[in-house]
Image (spheres, rainbow, N blue to C red):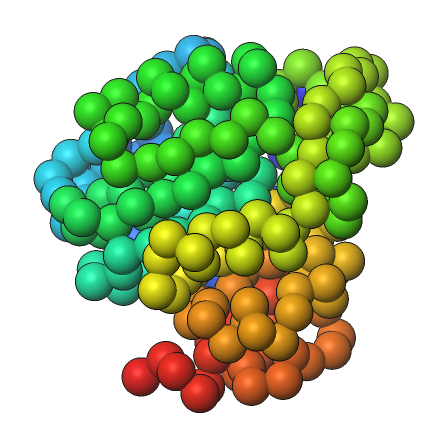
Length: 253
């Protein structure tokens, strides 16, 4: 497939996040017309490299398919995982090829990011995208789930879409760590977590609902790639397109 259906393009125009993304594409990207052409029309060859302006200067992002362009726009233009410049600790469940991590790491020179990604092909690309940031991220080559152990992980050729137990063209067995246990371990070394980002293709809701009250108290923002109609005690909720955003009202300013 090399272009989006017209109906899908038209629907995008009527959503608020599109207007935010449109303005930010022109504000932050070196070649905004090229980004729009790739994002809306599926035009352009891959792999390619695009430059984006960040608080730490221009950052190069390697893209390997149209689907990576979607992620790039989601992170740097649509601001699905919007982060302030003074964040210090981020946990990224489902780091893919490192685009979201690149966004977090370029907010300031001190932020530390804990990354979780099980696919070897994605990890190789992630390391290339995060070159120069090696001292500020901790990479865990595991999937995040509801129990510790090993499980089948289904994925497709681009590496963007995949998850535990999913029936997709390719399958590998991966190590799995329980999400709540991961958070508890990180909080042994960090006073608080500014942002917990969850994009694990299917387990977002379950992971949210398995976080303990003690863990939730020490997380300021949670962004999960899911439609969520419930609430988390002590959090303010916003459904931003396909991402549910939670802000800790007891700790966040």
